[in-house]
Length: 168
Ligand code: S3P
Image 1 (cartoon, helix red, strand yellow):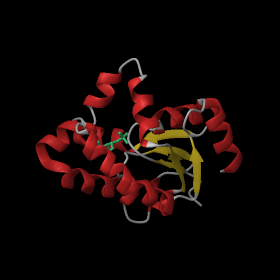
Image 2: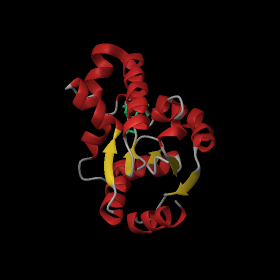
Image 3: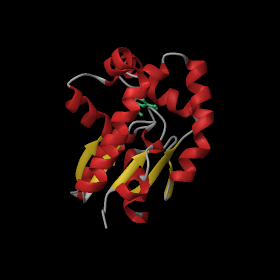
């Protein structure tokens, strides 16, 4: 049993924030797939997309997934919005989908103090029409991969993490 919790969901839904709150509350360890890739590559996700393209980044996600499933236990793992497509996601741990509407996600991002940075670092959020199309394409796919679906829209971090710790 891996005993990891894997948080999936669209860009900007709050996977990182919720993972950090869960780490504080549960005493489990925390890791983030984008952070792991950035540290191996010694460059930002945005730069990887620009210099080597999305396909290269997706291959790094697969490599990271393999490593996580073989080496990591008792950890809250937050993931990039496209990470859910890796093979054997469920082997890494219990998969929790953080669900919100597209408008809810954009509102949340715009309300952040460093909103511009939050948009800038995400190449797939540059074009809102394309981002919405990606959201529509992925919405059902996230649900299919999830062991647990948690509605996060317009909810406090505390109530979200309490629900996750209750149902996990
Ligand atoms: C992506 C989401 C990003 C990052 C990359 C691609 C995606 O992570 O992995 O820009 O395909 O949805 P966040 O979900 O943390 O923004």
